[in-house]
Length: 321
Image (cartoon, rainbow, N blue to C red):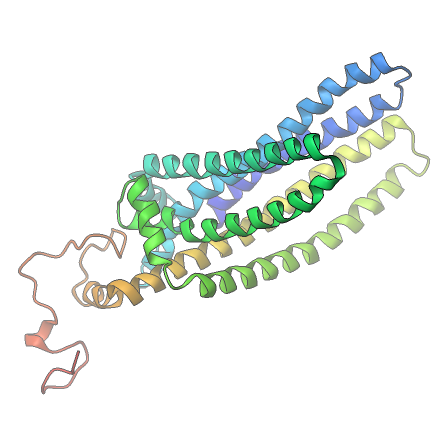
């Protein structure tokens, strides 16, 4: 799980580093602007970098949505104490990669369109009403955030459902919506606590990196000039992005594990998945598959085994259902 998350985080870190260096070069060039024409010419690269920053954020979110579905494989298998290697994880998840890509595209486009709609409405209100539009824009923005969080939590289990239950894009979204019914506040609380934990840990780890970057800057460039500042920025950017990628890999793998366990918990509460897992544990069926999907046991397999006795149960009548 850590290796897969590290690959995604490394891709994002490379793009973030490129954008950071581009912003620095642009800020240095803006210091030499002396006319409106030069300023207008410099705004082109600035807008391009801003668009690149947005694109990097969208790419990381897209890859994260796909990887969340992939990482549910080792979590689901670990419920039955089955180890999963890197190759096996991607082999099992690779069969569902197209639906995962589809749901990632759908969620990403939906989020972008919703954000664009809110921004567009806000711009129109400010154009028509001026400063007075704040009375409408602020509640609109807060309400949009609330709706976004609500829908996001309702649909966050879709990648897990697509991989484990082998559903399509629409069925995966519908399945997530059904599983989270009457459990939204509990899921929100768990997600919020995990996000706070991850954020605090990431900030604590980043503090030594920031101090090291400042120390390197003082040692390498005691009398800074443009070239030395650029060289120092490259070094500190590489160090900070590398540390950020490592920390992000651990935190993302942890968050994905939490989401996968929430999915398994809801399946046990609503579908009686724990009984199916007990049957798989007892029979040892489908040792190389993903627990929780469609049953692979023969139709004539009796359950409970041992002539109607539950595992580890002493002879006697069956316990009540």
